[in-house]
Length: 427
Image (tube, rainbow, N blue to C red; front, top):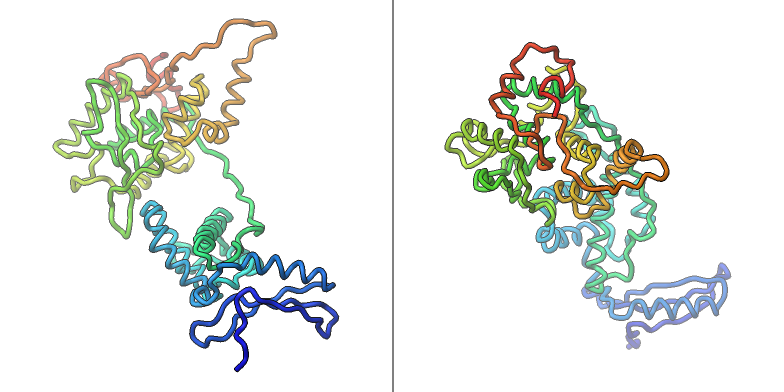
């Protein structure tokens, strides 16, 4: 009976093509009992000897017999159910499930877990970029290939799953390392100007949604955060607003969801103007627990407020923007009016002021140039809460005006193209 070769045992031989080969045992097939052999190649015996030694050391403790029972697809399923489901937000988890079902499993899911290489992944990413979009009705007008950002997200997902495989001693390396990833082209940020906001608010009032968009532009809340507000989060006496939850659509249902990051849980101050608007909204909301309830009394759908935004913009003769661009508008105006980056970052719930600075670098640069003084000026720079050139309940403060007075002004027959300051008074 032949001697069973132990794990890590290897030998070196010269091949017919002139190269040297080193073979070593990494385990045994649990079903057949046969040895699982791997090899290294080199031009000289000394080179192969060194490679063989390194390979054997790297494979110590790796359970290739167990690893052989997993494919890329089956391991990603295990990672999804036992790790990703615990760590990811529900909406992100659902997106990851789509990546696995529609892209990963059909293309590379059958590759044995330990055999997948960086080249396999590189070819996979190229396929996704060239024509990886799933053929669906809602995707007919979109490019055939996936966006670079989506490919990067899939890459990160595979990398996380392989990191777990490394920890479980199923593989010796992560094939995502060394892959060339597509560059993400950052789309230019769109914001509304002061003149455009005048027309926007006029139309929002006529459409009965003034309070919703007013509060968003006064606080810079994310769409889900705005819709997740309950009256228990609002303290009109103290003038503060707590951000505690978000609203999202999952599996076709509008549900409560945790906030994006721990920094998103925050308390924002409210000015007198914002308090007046919220009091008016309280009368409109009636007995609902939600600040902005749907017709059925529950939270509004994120989709409905987006469609509503597009209708208001179209009727006001304004360019089409995303809901998130209202948040950009808030941040841009705050920075342009001298609010420091750290304060704006805290208001937005960003994880760091550095991220805010990177996102709005063009705004801060322009503001610094406008405020730049001649050489030798020595007056100290002090932080002063700015007053919006809008009728906004900005958390940074504004002159108190009664909400009823603003309503009367908005009913005036002044031309729509007049400036904000002319419409609502110079602050």
